Figure 1 (cartoon, one colour):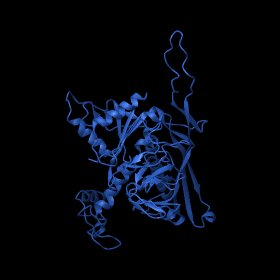
Figure 2: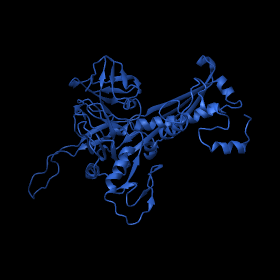
Figure 3: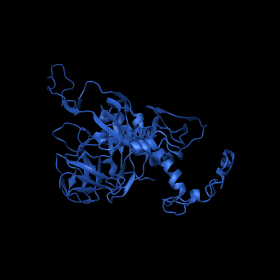
Figure 4: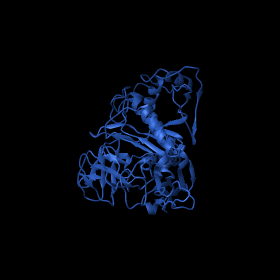
Length: 451
């Protein structure tokens, strides 16, 4: 068939996937195997799945809504701060005219340490691919293309670290590995240290270093021979990357799926010598259900809001996954009062909520608090290793910030001798950390059903 004109190509392009202006074999056969393409989405040979599906997933996978919502500040001259956790016992009381004064007591002060963490992303291209990409039919500037994609991946990595889960039940293990559901493995990063409850007793209090993570199988490799088994808990002791919001709202020694994490399971990176479950460092309201799935209710959400206000905060953001977003919409739709609909959006940092109506049918706020769904919000896991729905976080963002020590830097290297190859390499790195100045006004609801 002769090459079509532009007008012929545009006309033919509207006829769907079964026809092609370039002939019957141009799209219908796999160039490598000769197998005919199909238009279904059930297999890798489906032309729809291989093209449009991939583009849609990439667009979804690059969302970084929570990172955009949290305020970003300059690091400043600080390596941490102190938190008053106790008012002092009996030092304030009524005094009669000739009565004695209250006993002298002092506040309990705990130290919060916070140092910047480094997140890096690399990319590269061979000298030959850089040249060939400029030829007719090439992608153009391949380094610019890879740089752009690396930037998206870099911010996505930061967002995933900010929303990493902090503790899960193991589904098995060996001498140097423990297993979690594959969908959960991404919450463990190389360089993290983990501890937990192994066979009913506390694991190594110094933590095991994570040396490898397989996000396809859920196998996490550690540097010390131990004996994680099905039903044991594996919890983050310290992060190699950014502190997550799940670390901040959790409590020391927290219960994971009905299994105690032990006294050394850390919540936030606090320099404490005595870490006891349920003590001062618990969030305003940390609601679990012993690893048993339950539906999101307005009572659960109202309790989290109430606890934050009782602790002197004011909720500024409800963070949840898309599944809980729709669950909450269904909860409120039965109470709908149609007195006119006015679409509006609420700004949260540099993000905006989905368009909503003041009647609440399509949610933008609840009790005036903006609702922000993010695809990376962590999920809970049931006692039978089933992955449940996403958690819900109610946050006072006045006390949350991403402190930036060094803004994102780009470094390019063309030293072929150092690389021992004809390649051009690029590096993006950011030095920052998420800080929470008041953990008493952050709340979490976990063990929720997806629908």
